[in-house]
Length: 453
Image (cartoon, rainbow, N blue to C red; front, side, top):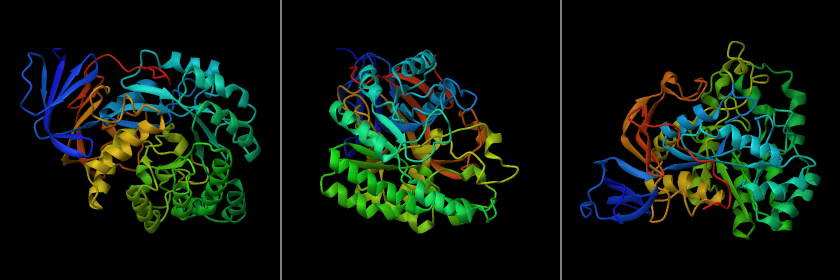
């Protein structure tokens, strides 16, 4: 059958190999992969030359906040930023929107809000909160990909945190339906104990914020989750891992067969606490960015597979909530907006440590697709997969100019940094959605639901 489109490049990432290839696309799906000069069909051709053609990134940790807090971020702005960053699939977190995605009705409201606004394909996680265990099966049936919970206050009253007893009610349901549980893994005890000291320190110092969220909070929470995952046979995923102290117990649990995975984020792999200026609340996130040695241990764990994937944790808010004039780390909103920059940040830092395209695809395409159960469609260049592709120049560099970001709000700790890896063109199911700084069509992104083809 004659393809609708052929994409050529001398550097296509197929499996673990980088080679010249021609990718044939028909009806939004990769229909064939041929030698670079073997395809002669009379159809449109996109010649990428020496640029790298890679699977579109799959970002499974994004806060879009619509409906209800669209002034923080919305579907239109977030998915345009994604496309500009080579991200072709998002899975959005259940909190920060109003209502939170903790019921079937809320999920339907979320899908209705997204309709007609998506530049890239977007799915949703459901939420586990106290008292909604009876809702989980129905939410999974209508299409969420799994469930997220917090072990500490989330920052918004619509999404309360859970206790171990709440998890003991939810986990049997999640195991029975085969749904993963994603967890913000910080234990309240160490944070509350730290608060007794932190209130006496200067709130404008980054060291004060760091002390307020000690490693013990993550370590103790992860130990409890390993215990529960083992007891229930549950599939548990630790989001935004920051504490390298937790790596040995994670490594041991995985080796013993516990169904536990973990992610970290670009900001934990790019920044270090000792280099963050006091008052620079654009760096505030929870768990916090930690010390330089901690960062390098995260990189080692990512390389050896203890940490499975990288997700942005794109967590925006109006700039005034960052309190940049006051520089108060204890009162400022915590979250870093980086959806558009994840690929170049990771490439810049990864190549410095000897990692290449193979690892980048595993961390940012294949493993996130597997977490969401989307590996049959997303995350790799193979026949039968969606033609979600990013074409980028890994040798080119640019300086981060906040004015060029497509997130709703432009405040970013990456401002002014020189990064390598310029995204040139992004395709979603064979549709060119971004090219050379321009968006190419009306929004064509789909709402993804679990279980749909």
